[in-house]
Image (cartoon, rainbow, N blue to C red):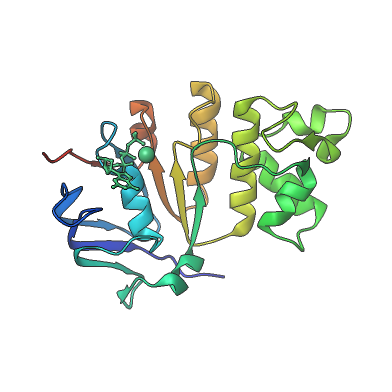
Length: 215
Ligand code: DGT
Ligand code: MG
């Protein structure tokens, strides 16, 4: 559907406030189309800021962020190339099925089940109400790790060329996390960007980007 799509940072300097600290200083990096990258760095290093620059929620103070083969400068329009799974629980109150359909409103039950399998959500099939199980706004009867996996299934259904995960697997046990990363990586036409505090994730990625905190 979508061609593989990369993201390029070219000489990006960014500060939140005039005269404030540079979160990025003449930063250049290419997220190559169809590859996976682990983004690591201490707290405050700028990982979430990197995401906001990609989503054009922020504009570089200097330099540019570009996307795709045409290397177009990012605008709000280009947000449609991304799906973003943020930190924390982002499920709405409603059933598992209703949550998944936010990712793809016309998905068949088979497509929903496929996305659940890829994101290690087999537990849904074992619940009495299956995809009719209720998730309340803050996860309800689901554990944090279960809610995270359903949010990832929803993101997979959205089927965008670039997937951004900001600590989106932090509540999973390491075995499940690795299995999930492997499943997602097998969809190798996607450009995957995993922000993580867990070094083990690096072993599952083609590239590692370490962000440093500037003083
Ligand atoms: P984390 O999530 O705690 O591991 O940290 P990162 O790596 O996601 O860091 P990030 O991008 O949230 O913050 C980078 C720097 O920018 C840090 O010094 C805090 C500052 N910062 C973040 N968000 C804002 C904001 O909305 N306004 C201002 N003025 N500064 C911000
Ligand atoms: Mg962050």
